[in-house]
Length: 378
Image 1: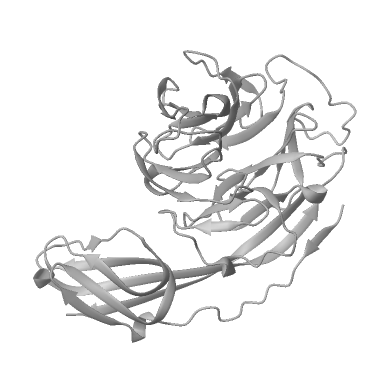
Image 2: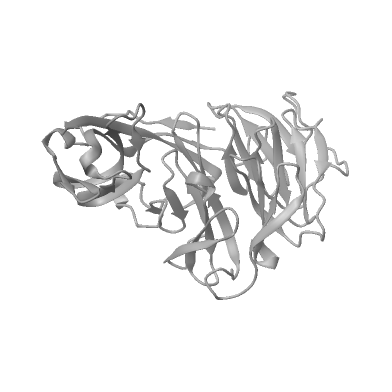
């Protein structure tokens, strides 16, 4: 196995724009004009007379924006000052490691990569029907499924099959806030829960069996979302893991889905769903209300998010979108030529980790971030 590390040079990607920006008041809105078009995330704190705490705006995603309007809930005549915070970021390559093979810590058909709050990485190898758990340095920690979970260096002693942990085309893994993992076992039509050591805890019960559970995620409110691809919907389980409602169902109307492939949970528990049959990204609230959509190329196969809630649509060409589905400039990540990731995940430190089909490679990109703050007095 070879691991390739790249020298990281941090050039000055961003100009300090807020200090040379202008602020104006227009009715009940605050207008900030930038000296040049800006791409990034802006949040403003509006300080209001006789209020102890400022009003903090929702994060605004700016794409080549020269001017932004921020509504003031009490009217601009009550303002004393405005504190603006602009965050800009790009990713640079850090490491690349090929793990193709059948030996310890290797895989032949990686279909999914995910991470937990401790920075562990999980790769699902469909060729061997197993889940591999790595540390942040890509050293193997444990295996579940086709091999027994342990730290034994001998793979030959570890093959086994038990009813609870025997997978048939596992697809995705999601950690939960209760220190457990959920794994979608597609061809067995089930979702199982394990503890942190990979011990089987339970199989989720549904009113009617999953046809083909694929993508799976746990929200900040500890609700579990499971995509049932053959039923063209996402089943939602409450915090007690009781089936509560679903998103989608077959159809071509905005709130319906046709051959959904993947989904991600973004800011405020909104969902972005990859609807391949309709060639759309669709945005929903977590309680299934349709918000809007964006057209995508037919080659897009998976979705992931970064720590700033951008949505990455992965395929022959990776496209980034803001949480409200506006295309982000392609300069965000300098992908190598013929780089075709099948999945990606964001680590707690902000690093993005991509899983490539070619050579079963894992590539790490680190964010170069600049946060610019400026206070405008009125």
